[in-house]
Length: 320
Image (cartoon, rainbow, N blue to C red; front, side, top):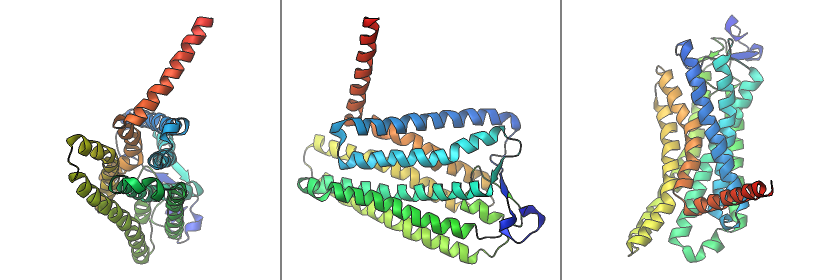
């Protein structure tokens, strides 16, 4: 085991996920909270994907990206939440070495893919508002597919590098990870390896992932705001801003939580866990709500589906 002073990480067969340092009686409350949030994530994101796939009116680039965003949110929250809920009832709170590798790999893949996808969505809004006459030409099906595939590809490459680099470290200090899932920074804390090269590569990866996506989003919205302010009618400006406010809200929550977490000093691990909750569970829960509550097309499609269900149910009752 890694806590016996060995210098070989391959002898670590499992880790312990410490989770939240609260009184045992609060574990039931946390479990119920996680269960409620995860149920809302499943319902919201599966519902959003179903609405987008079943309504022909939503066969547009914006909803194509939104469907992929729901898939990503659903997947990476499912990598985290079930194991965290199990550990609220577990005595050992252990996760296998392979399980920890898998969790970090999948989470890193999908969180990076989401960053690039949000940048693609900002570009989509930029074309829709600044060049509406060329929108259908510029945002072709081929380009949209390439942007989504590129997001997943960048996430995969980044995840392979991050995961392989993290798990070549030696874990001789401890096998107790002070977090509720396997993440890079908590794993660094229990390593006895020299972390200089590891931190430099991590900083480089963050720079080439976060900076370009933020620049694309900021520049896109600078042009969008400039164009919207030139619209003479109040109704036109309101409509243009409403199509962007949902996306901007999602971007702010996700990037705000990530940046906040990585600026928190290591001596405040509990604060880091709370920040992690924002983008691992809260953001995937809020995204479908933000996009559905502020979107007439989605609300219309939802009413149409519910209307069909109610009609079918009434027809069955009439027959009976």
